[in-house]
Length: 113
Length: 110
Image (cartoon, rainbow over all chains, first blue to last red; front, side, top):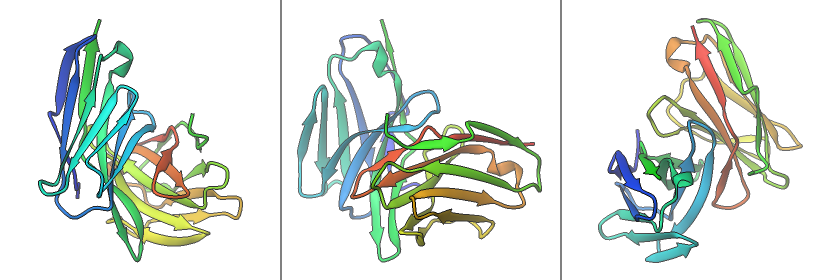
């Protein structure tokens, strides 16, 4: 079963605009990560935010985390055509039997020139 | 580039056959995880290996099995293939919390 749910499922914007994607999850987490996937290939790690952090920046990316609402958002500023991809949030499921990432279904972002 | 490689890139099998997928982890990473990603879905955790021992398993039947070798390369084996096993199979290596993914193997079961 999928722990995270991204919203919206699809997003279409023009170059230069900002893109915001949201993620909601169900159970307590240690950290939350965002990944990007181009055309059904491997996932590229973007950013990790820990449960005791509220906001984190990396280049044009800004991630927020609200553990009380069990939600996170990813903001991509000044988007480029190369940002076209699927974006996934992943929450950890650390237990005595390992450390799995639980992914949502993703947000498909299209950035047009 | 994550330093994680997978082979083969694509594979076509028929129902009932067996398949082995391979992954080479990033240097120094002692943990490898395998995920199945069906079309239009997010990756689903299959299992994880830490220092050659299975360290966690998702909701997959026993016909999905794996191995991790001393050089941290690993294999995913799937027996008695079913049509629903058609998917992108991703491995990810890690040392701490961040998992670094390979490009995946696209398996098609006919």
